[in-house]
Image 1 (cartoon, rainbow, N blue to C red):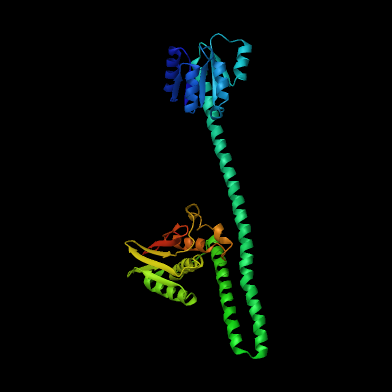
Image 2 (cartoon, rainbow, N blue to C red):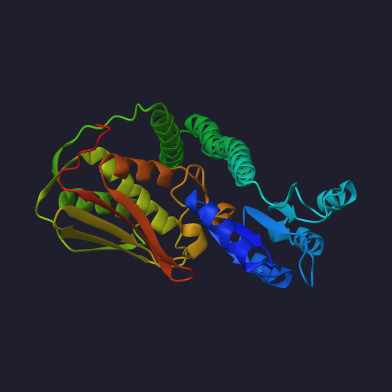
Length: 374
């Protein structure tokens, strides 16, 4: 928008008409004081400012405007009928003006200058946008690098922990063999098996994320019953966590066309997280529901919960909620992999949570789960 400041109504009207005829948006002020009030409220690309005005003259107005952080980039063109001497023109530039036109105004020259300032303004704005985008991109590279370094550190630790345990149990097994102590042998073998399973899960997650990154995560979509899958997973999880009650509500009789193994992977991830992040509790609720075109599955725990501001991040790659990262194991990629699996089924994944009351992780997929990436 252009602001014209002149104490002569005829000048305001004539300049306004010419500029509006050339599709410029125009505002007017009949005094320096009125102009300053408008500059505080509105943003202007250009101010055409008369020098000779009662009260505040144009130079004083320009100096005041240059002190406003909001308007310091606004271009000012001075108009003057009397003060055409070099010293007055110099004063105009020193007070913040970028150009100086004498009256009577040559409208063609004024229009040329206005168009030039508008072009400069547009170019400047684009440069600022490009600069901001570059800075945002650089900051995103830095954050990604920090996340990658943190992930490598966590992965090294998480992989080393079960591996060290297995090595310890193998040494104990060696000693037990020499003693012929079969019960102790079986006990150490069982514990080593648990650690090997943890190691296998970690390696599987790492392989999955590598396949996601390279676009090679494969899906074998066939019809299956979600109720049968849920019952099977609940039985498996309960065997390894007998202290937890896994309560299922709802039922779906229709078949889903999807990758049963991958959907099982998501449900197991949700259930193991629900148990892991709910210390001191003894129940996890699983709800399944036919919602017409989609099937809904939610896993509800009664644990520590997640702050609202952090909920949007939990499905990001390598993300771990800071409050829980130091207390619980994990690479911070299970939920990211789960989200990718659900998205590849054309579905949605999310979380509802209240700190101190628990969380419900859920997904919804169409019964005929196809997507563009199949």
